[in-house]
Image (cartoon, rainbow, N blue to C red):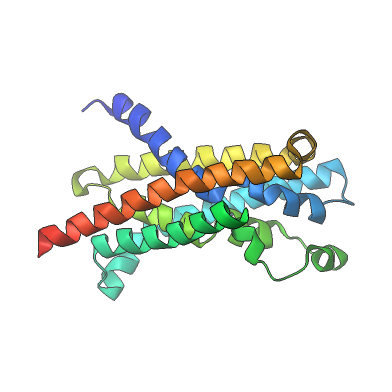
Length: 217
């Protein structure tokens, strides 16, 4: 088996599937607000912690996803269709309102900042970076790993997650520059493009699940 060739093919596939739903650019405004009065060292620390937490959350759901499926008697096709529907809803929200998952955070950023809390886990890592959509994507990828290639398949998905989280860290660490360069309208435009790509991915997940359902009938 050409492991190098398979890795070169599927790692970018996983990364491109996860990146639109994580959409680090949509987290930039929240990050800027929360770290407005922090030192540069503290900002980088918060960005690093948020990304490490996001990586850990997604890795945990990747490895326990099959256990959840077995425990509740859920079929792999059901996971794919459900994940696709969740992603589709989030994609429509990004397309038609220009908002990502961070828009659902009810706590005001200024209130969190005033309390001087460590917000790297919540709201940055979860639900902004590793929210329901990202978890659904990871579980969907995990459900498609062949039984005869579990170790290599999980390695591929972990590499894709790691690359996506690294991109998220670069975005958060350079958030001030990104916000200045793109501006509010630029960030909204990128979010809508991500939403369109995400819609295509969601439809693919749903179609794959429906196909599997039809084959079992």
